[in-house]
Length: 141
Image 1 (cartoon, rainbow, N blue to C red):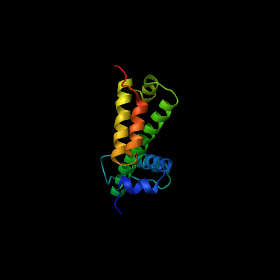
Image 2 (cartoon, one colour; image 1 turned 120 degrees about the horizontal axis):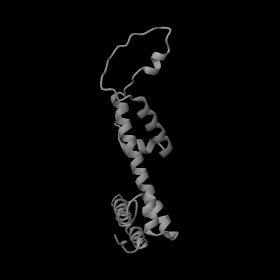
Image 3 (cartoon, rainbow, N blue to C red; image 1 turned 180 degrees about the horizontal axis):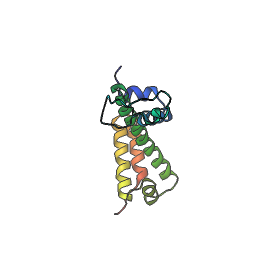
Image 4 (cartoon, rainbow, N blue to C red; image 1 turned 90 degrees about the horizontal axis):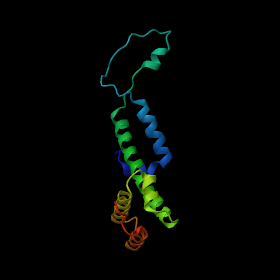
């Protein structure tokens, strides 16, 4: 099996992908050394706590692909959230504050998201046009 975001996106919901990503990232100690041997006392269970673990190659690739799945889903939710906020009457100052960017950056990001969705055919040209109209004029810097 090839580990790609497309494969994992079909297999995992957002919450499952995030849980699995968290599990894998916590399992890897980040140690640069491999195959180190520590003296072991059979009666001392603290050695388990101090044991360093590393991900194998399939797990590392899964971790990378899961990060991309989550990033894509987060990007998709931004478009949904911005459109809902605009429909509800929020201004670009409010949307920008929620995204922690300047209003003109939020407006630009919104238009980029529309373009991405249009290119991937998630939005048809009519829906993309309506989303652009909803944005209104670009806010001043």
